[in-house]
Length: 157
Image 1 (cartoon, rainbow, N blue to C red):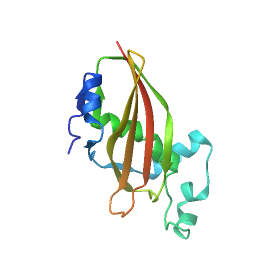
Image 2: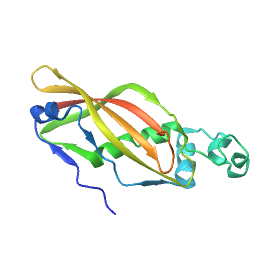
Image 3: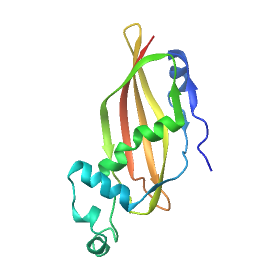
Image 4: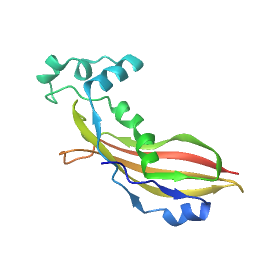
């Protein structure tokens, strides 16, 4: 199964009209131990709950788990599968308003995302600041793995 084509927004007016509308979910995305190990290497975070399957089996999650920041780092990947903004000369990540990790992502599990643009503010004549809430779900889990409010700025041509 492949991702549904992203919704395309071509103007500020189209973005404004979409505030509050949920998009998703994406297709499932596997989180394998090799990805967790690679993230541990890249960030120098080799805590045993992430990289030692034998020890982690007896730990609080029953298996190794992805770093919360690994899960968070996938937010742009998921958002780009759900929406595309055209007609901009530049878009930048401006920051995060709120991030929570309610549930672990165990190695070998699958995650997917839903996203909602929660606010849009005009900045001058040619820019907007957009806040997007992304919820990352874990297959079979009651609680989401991550809920993050991403703040982006888009500069229109």
